[in-house]
Length: 488
Ligand code: SF4
Ligand code: SF4
Image 1: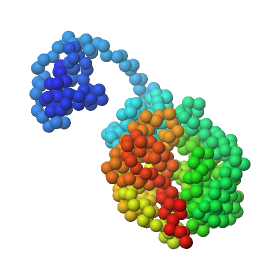
Image 2: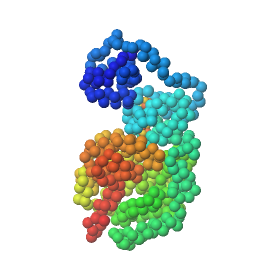
Image 3: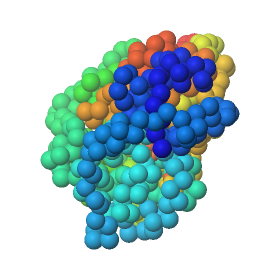
Image 4: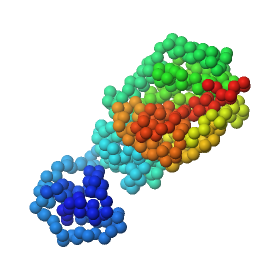
């Protein structure tokens, strides 16, 4: 049964502004069709649901004013939707029932996902389509590429459906020439030339030497950039974006190594730590990039591997080591930025001044170091980042929710490199609201992508008025060296 109503009538009945009703209609919250004479038609059931939501008794009764001729006209105008042919599809997207078949269709995943509803993206729908075998539609859609694979949906799913695995497999099924943005190109360049951007070896070595000289002339007398040092305790990878676009960013870690008296080395070849195979769904590429890191570790006989650039680099590398190079993990360790900085602080190898950063500060939990590491490796990094940040910033507050329930910043899984900037910014609204509600003016991030999303996007888009630092930038800026208050 359908009812005809004016926007002003419903607005008055529910005590809201007329524009609110119009917004509900436009957003589909209130399902109504346009009728004649600036009126709308809605189903009685929808009207009842609205009443329930507002705790009201329905004023309209099923026998009230209905223009059945109008209804029949509107109904005949409905688009013909092709009938789905179920049961004839071959399902190749999943081989484990926990990837889809055990879904309860409860929708909890959709309500937790910050981008659900944009362009029809809905994790529950995606899982359902996989079950129904609508694989071509899923692979052709951009949903998997707009999802940041943050695992927030998985975290709340009562059936433990592996939605992120499904999303990544969807990415892997896309024809390589149709992978959005430069991600696949970067993967190929890395395989061919040793880094995602294709920086030649001579240019890289020259730049590393120059940066080292600048440090030696400034705050770190005697500093020399170590490259291919056999037997160094620590082998350190590089994010190619740094030498390419932000070379000074490398100096924060180098200052910390200098202050700690660390034995460390870069490598002259295959130094890339970023692994875009994780984002493009290319397992073979991911494996090959990590295989080169293993070769470098063996060649230089280093004790510990550090991927200082990003949570995803750590996640991808540790994942590949566990899966394809388990024997290598008997030869060397992989440590996180948290492990190393806490080791330095606990053993007194570095000291920090906690009077430099006086602004109210908040630490952003990375999805890769947090709930994704917990799911993949049984170990998440939540308290460590807070301890390091608090050592430098006494006024540390929290975002809500946090730790394993934290919202992704919106830039994960290659979102910065994708041609979906509007979606990335929209996704980040949850994060912006969290930061704003925390009243923090300094945000600390442990990933490149998160830092860039806060610093170069959300701060402007949502007028947050915040300062943003990498965790190691914060530590480097707080360092106390003998005879110095801090390293400037
Ligand atoms: S939360 Fe899990 S069980 Fe519920 S709809 Fe989403 S995938 Fe299915
Ligand atoms: S992984 Fe994150 S972005 Fe992707 S569907 Fe789940 S909650 Fe949404």
